[in-house]
Image (cartoon, rainbow, N blue to C red):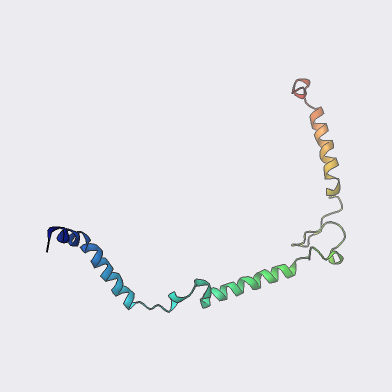
Length: 115
């Protein structure tokens, strides 16, 4: 044995013992569950099926956004089916907003409106 071989052996002894322990642990483990993806486990598939069912049920409660015949008159929330009162006037929102802006700006003092 030469000096450099003994040095390398001494410095790598902890790694060798760790490797032996890991190999022994791997031999004793059951690898049935490790052979596939976690998406393929029975419990994960059951959760995914439950999620799909819940989403499907929720979407069936909604009004179909592209079937205009099913839509009630006026504004309606397609998820909650809640009707807005006739006082809601979103079609005039731009006009009303411009009027409110002009009214607000006209209330400014002259020194601010020149900026």
